[in-house]
Each structure stands twice: as structure tokens, then as C-alpha cells.
Length: 305
Image (tube, rainbow, N blue to C red; front, side):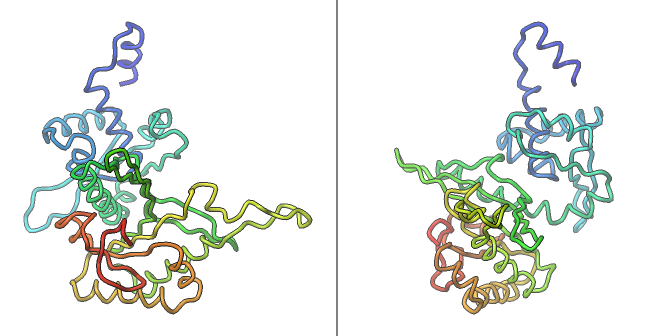
């Protein structure tokens, strides 16, 4: 692949569409960690053929840039591959413009990939629900507007790691409204209490100001999140992996935390907080009135929380 790129540069020939798709697939895997071929196609070529993406992925694998782990068979379905970058593929993506400044997260073995795959693929499903709705409504939200595993210090040597940070632009004529959200994806694999504790971590991030380097110097920079966001992103919980009754109970526990914990209650008065079921987003659309405000009230759209 490197030889082909040098040859094109030497002749002054523009990269072919296939070359471009190769780079886009590498970038998508670098950005989203692990995806199926179907998910990559929905991100990059929703109207493209399955065969085209399959050819690209298999070629990248033959070059040692990507590999896959096989998902467990469900109800005798065909074997599905979950694709990820090798260390060599991660090194190649460092110079891609869309990933500039973002560290690569290579998966070093199929065993490591199999451990991360269920949660990572579910996070990608959440992104695709927003991307599909943005496309339908004429809004802007693409593969590079969803950044997984974003980490922020919350003091005392602890860090909050959001499953994703989403950037989304609503477009209505000449009006553009830029929205951001921290996204937490819950597959019902942790206790409900542990899930709700995530709200405390976001409340701590909202208030956290680093101590000054020198005690005599007063810090006037404000909370650390202002370094990255003009407004504190809304916090969205997306739940799946359990019965509707159990998911409803987990959302109720999030609401209880928002009402009873003083730090979270303070956060909820200034930052929109909501929860929804992933299957509802996929069936009705991410912008539908399927979001439960954690402060209580009727379901609404996530942008209307």
C-alpha cells in the first residue's frame, strides 16, 4: 500500500476512489476501535455494496494493517467478523488528517479484541443511530464527530472516561445549532448503582478546577472542561441488554441519583441529563421523543432535554 501511494505521488496522479476508501476504512477503525464490515459500510458507504467493503478489508488484512475476531454465532447466523487495526495499521493512521492529534488505540491480539468487542460494537450502534437520523433530517453528524473513550481528570488522581463524546449540528435553513454530549452506553453488565455513580463523576468534572501550580498564584481559568468545550456537554445514557422492565428500573435509579445526590442535583439544574433505550433509538430515530429526562417529565428528543 505504501509503495502504491509513493508511485501515485511521483506521477502526480490523484488517488483513486479505492485508495481513498482504503484510507477512510483505516481512519474509521482508528476512530471507533472495532467495527463490523456492515457498520463500516453504514458509516462510509451506506449505499455501497457489501462486496466493496469486504474487498477493502481483506486487502488491508493481507497487508497486515487490520485483523478480525469472529463474533459468537447467534441462532445459526453466518459468522460475523469484528475488524480492528493492528499495531502496524495504527502507526499508518497517525498521519491521516481526520485523526490528527488523536492517539491510536491498537488492539494487540485477537484475545484483547474479543474482550472489548461486545461493548465497543454497542457504542458504534449508538453512533450509527444518531448518524442515520442526522442524514434523514439534513443535520451534520459523521464518523469523525463521535470520539470514543474520552478521558478527563476529576481530581484526587481519578479520571472520568466517557464512552464517547458526540458532536452534532442541527441545521434549519440558515440556522445552525451546535450540540455536544457525553454518551454512556450501558449493556446491563454492571450493577444499577454502579451505573448511577457515573453521574457523580460527571458532577465532579463539572466542578473540578485544578489546583494552581504555586499556592500564591490564584487560578482564574475556571473548570477544566472549559479547555475543550464552550458549554458543558449534556449527558446521555443509552441502555440495552435487558428486558424493558429492567431497563426502566435502571433509568429510575439514574433519576433517583439526579434527585438525591447534592452534586448531581446541582449538575442537573445546569446540564441536560437524559436516558433512552438503544432499540428505541434504532426503531424510532435518535431525535424521537424517546428520551427520559433524569429530572422527570414526559419523554422528549435528546436536543430538547
